[in-house]
Image (cartoon, rainbow, N blue to C red; front, side, top):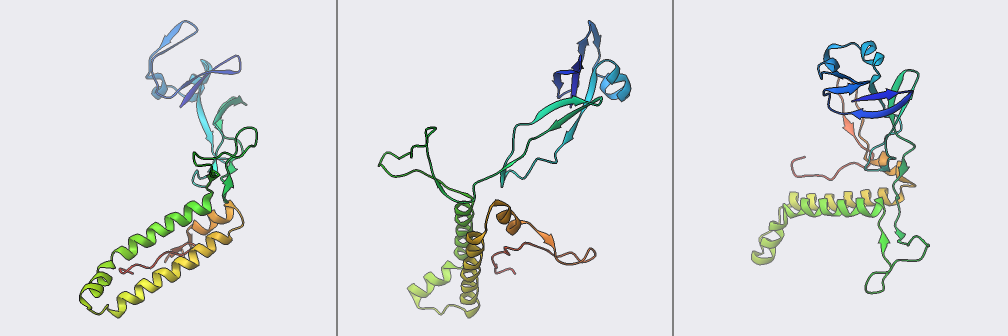
Length: 206
């Protein structure tokens, strides 16, 4: 991405290099590939440098709109301070602070990350257990014994689910939730083992 700077002000952003007119002179698109940075700067064209130090994972944070600034002979694209998404549920309110009710008169809830993550976890548990539900159905219909390995696995899934839900519920804030889901190398550089504090559900394959 490039920017045109006139009188120290950014006047236009160029996402796709193309022919353009500057000070009544038309320049072909190839100048972006064959001219040096100093030659482009001389006619007011600067490559945009991205500063993503404030940009955070949008799963956990709300980023500000990007902004562009020209200083020290450089155009920089950056973001302001990101805001953590709410980790807890809250009552929905209007601009005056009044509670928002649904058509049945019930309070509308803004569901926080904890509720969303636990809902996702429950769905993952349901998907994992569904792989072996047919053993339960067969036992009910035909009284065929459920293999001990299957029962052990299903119990392990539910036990791990309870542990994970507790960890999510007990997280103090959004950064703490993010940490639970962040994989780190608990092994060595030569033999890496990537794990996350939250752990993962057991599967039959594992």
